[in-house]
Image (cartoon, rainbow over all chains, first blue to last red; front, top):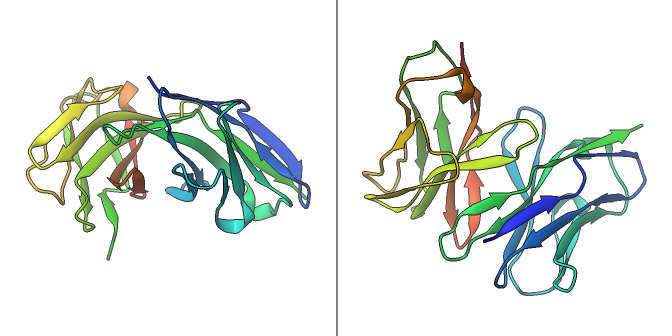
Amino acid sequence: AQSVTQLDSHVSVSEGTPVLLRCNYSSSYSPSLFWYVQHPNKGLQLLLKYTSAATLVKGINGFEAEFKKSETSFHLTKPSAHMSDAAEYFCVVSDSNTGKLIFGQGTTLQVKP
Amino acid sequence: NAGVTQTPKFQVLKTGQSMTLQCAQDMNHEYMSWYRQDPGMGLRLIHYSVGAGITDQGEVPNGYNVSRSTTEDFPLRLLSAAPSQTSVYFCASSYASLAFFGQGTRLTVV
């Protein structure tokens, strides 16, 4: 069975400092992995996806994530946080047989001025 | 091209009432799904469909029914609303594991 664990429920950074949101996955085969962002009272927006091509994936708004099979991790990073990055972030793994998406519990990112 | 359209955006129900949340997509995707979002629990899969006429249960199906008579539409029915069904509901349409989400329906059951 596939699963996703987001290691931090809440992360707080100062504007202009790096962001690290941690995600570990469990999968019996090569997974498809995603990061989605949800701003307050909004829907979900795809930040980036990994589908077994390059292990370093670049997404929108300066975010990127690195797939590390040996560590079963897919952490999301950004070099410099902006106030507009404050939102909830979800790490997601896709079951390639059924198309089901399995969500992590979410990480709330707070950006302080 | 509207993507995934959910209606209504907000709804208040009394315990025991029934209602249908509508979801429509115009991308001709075979796979559609319904999720509920509750604080600290991420999104949990309620029901999904891999094509017209085919539906299956997800992680939290109790109290909900679905049908898929066309590729475009995938309504979610609450048969007898309960306060535990107060949540935000998202419909998604997928192709090649890439999901597109509707804007959500915020449902309150009193």
